[in-house]
Image (cartoon, helix red, strand yellow):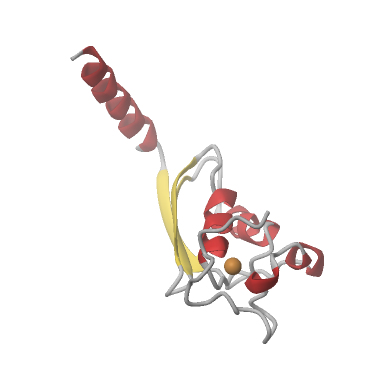
Length: 124
Ligand SMILES: [Cu+2]
């Protein structure tokens, strides 16, 4: 019972603090496989980001964030920071080079992992 109570208090607190200028944005991010999805979502695991969900089929990410801490530009930079182009900014060649081989969405040889197969493996 106590844990349930504490849980409800925590949820109420989170809901309250999240109400403080919460904003939502969706933008395009290049990616080809489950590893890309994990990498992109991990990059958005930041303080002030409430939720981030990458849609591999639509190649878009939906981000709920605190507008005090983040803006659209800084959010785009999170994706390019791990080597993924957005619909507004490009990752540097250096950032792109760090991607796993099958995640090289810019090259025609890349995307070999599309359709699954070893999506769940961790090559890092
Ligand atoms: Cu990938």
